[in-house]
Length: 375
Ligand SMILES: C[C@H](CCC(=O)NCCS(=O)(=O)O)[C@H]1CC[C@H]2[C@@H]3CC[C@@H]4C[C@H](O)CC[C@]4(C)[C@H]3C[C@H](O)[C@]12C
Ligand code: NA
View 1 (spheres, rainbow, N blue to C red):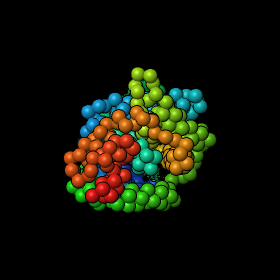
View 2 (cartoon, helix red, strand yellow):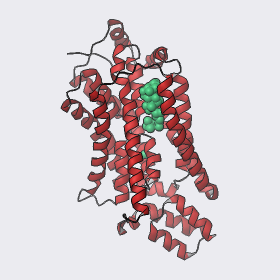
View 3 (cartoon, rainbow, N blue to C red):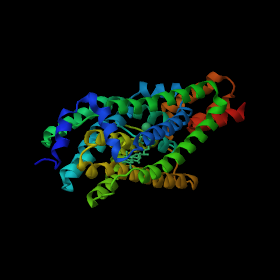
View 4 (cartoon, protein in one colour):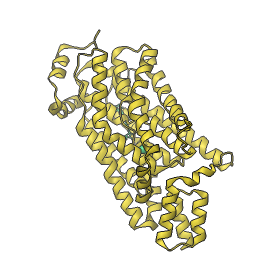
């Protein structure tokens, strides 16, 4: 059994090596001349958001998470090792037709979405940890994505050579790492402005990403063919990912905090939909079967952001009403140790403020507020 396609596409796909992937993407933009503009605009907006995210990250805290890598490796493991087989299993359970199933698997084998950093910020998770996980999973995806897709191609007997858009994966990585670095430099050197910059930039990016989702979807001339299986899978896949991402950290030996669990949960569920769309467009841009695949990343993106908004809403409300109290164990998070160390080092804050920071387990943005008050 093979994917239904026309001969010219098969020839193109077979001949298509890594080098021609850019050409293929240019050719495929016939189906939507605005695709490159859309891509560049979206990338710039995300980069702006990532400067904001970077401005909440204190380099020492980030380093603490990388030095004690239990939580951060678990997130990367969930993202790169658990999600692909999970997506495969779901396509089997729902007996998805081959082309549609491939779209789902491509989405499942993608690295963590950069949107996770923003969601973790709204959800009062550990942004530093999220940044470490997204960065690492995007970097490692340069290797794991081709590997998973190769395994899938062999296992499912697919006739095509799937093209991995290494250039776009690299751009995705750069658009993540460089702006976060810029933001971290702001935090380290202009601590007074870091708070306002992070708030404004993250808010701007959140609003503009939403606008982009709507505008992009309308402007691109993709035929809107969606099957019920795609909708069902896009609806349950992020939900299952959220659930296992939340439960796994409670595994007896792991002893991770609720906050870390929440962060890993978001990181597991939020997949990079842009990369998935790029893999599909570059590999199948000229083929009619692209219709059966391309809308899945859009659906997945809409659902993952939708769930995130709902969970963040519930969480924030529960916290405001005092239904949720962070555990005592939260104090032992390396984040707080790092922040407390930062406070001590700055020497501008009285000992009591240090104690309070430790006690409350305050996150970075608040820490500066604390700092400002105390100075
Ligand atoms: C704006 C969104 C991602 C924003 C974001 O935050 N990106 C960071 C990476 S991450 O995804 O968070 O990890 C992206 C994610 C999926 C995209 C659709 C995919 C199908 C289709 C492809 C066509 O070429 C253009 C129109 C099209 C409908 C696309 C519109 C828009 O571009 C969408 C919604
Ligand atoms: Na992240």
